Length: 189
Image (cartoon, rainbow, N blue to C red; front, side, top):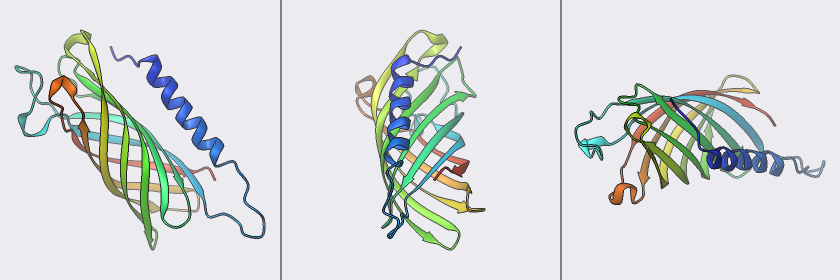
């Protein structure tokens, strides 16, 4: 059965609270503010260890599916911050799955109703070994790009989000999951 470490819940809750609190600052009425906050959910598919770099000899390199959440704090001048949590808990073989909690800067620009972006994130990942025997955490560095499409003033569709992750020193060698996500977001502010 899937379990979430308490420290991960605390870290992600703290991140989410700080993100929302930082956006609560009011800009002077004469200048206005172009800052916005979007919160959303996503569905993801990841290849945990591409190119057969499996850290678990004898176990298949099954593609994992999962769900996640993200918060985008967008500032003016094409910059922002993205935070995401992803739980790759579907299509497990022998209960092998992954979770990640990442935060970092995001560069973006608009093209009509599309918002194209690139991101560099850092955080922590948890790899759950066969049959719930043990979980190992590792620092994770991730690079990605994608496109959001604005359906209305409040609703955006995450049309595509591609991400390359580097799990640093995982099992003394590291792994490099590669995946994609789609989702839906609501503008809070």
